Length: 187
Image (cartoon, rainbow, N blue to C red):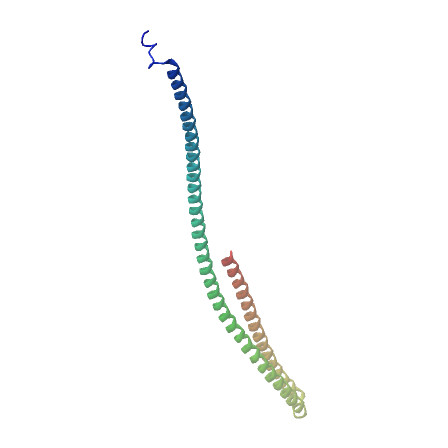
């Protein structure tokens, strides 16, 4: 007990020191808890930023894929447009050829119709003149011969009309076929 009574060893000093150490400990524990909270908050922010980064990366990959798909579609569409234009050009050429053929056939028909009219007029004139010179039997024979000639001319005219109709039908079929092909390429 002699040590306890000594002036150097005082309980109240130790007690005060102990209280001071406890306060210091509490303060340090409080600071440690605060630092842990801050550290946890920073870790959560880092994790959120990491998730954001991954999400942004995935979004960027999807956008790049979408851009690539759009480029491929644009390329295919461009190729289809070129093919359609080439097809249209070919059809235009065929149509212009058919139109020219129709014009030529129409012109030939007009010329032949005029020629036929002239021949019929000439025949009528000859018929009137022949009536004066021929007897009834000879006249009937001449009439039959000219009627046959007239029938031949009419047959030829009908053949030309049928040829024009066939050309018009062919042209219409080409137009329909061109529209169908164009519709297929646009799909």
